[in-house]
Image (tube, one colour):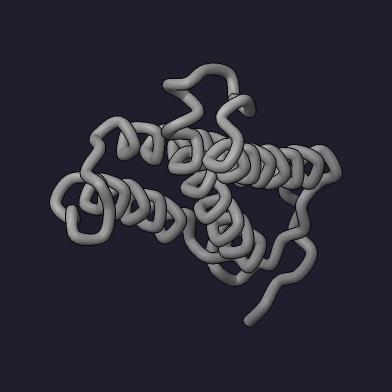
Amino acid sequence: MNENYKFQSKKITNIVFYSLILLGALLTILRWISAFNSRIMVINEEINSHISNLSLSLIVYIAIGFTWTLQGLKFKKVVVLGIIIMIANILCETVMGFMNTPDIIDAVYGVIGTIIGFCFLALSKRYGLNIIQKTD
């Protein structure tokens, strides 16, 4: 399919999309709350200290990527967006020490979040959309 189509997501695709957004938001909120209360933990201490990179990368990627997919943009652009998010994670967590404490594990979690988002976007592109409009 090309850029001359607009799409509508199927009901199950919407459920998964909003569930992923909600999960990412909850993980991020729990992580931020745990900074003030050490008794609040997301799974374990290791995951707790890195989960915000995963969830924020996931939310940004699927929010933008899914919107682009519904608008009919070529999926290559969605893939490029994911690559940019992964590169940004790696750069921010390695060479941009003036903005952030360098931590390669944070970058790995961000890349994992982007990969999870890619899986959702690829599956929704393949199985979770209906054509609603052909544009000229």
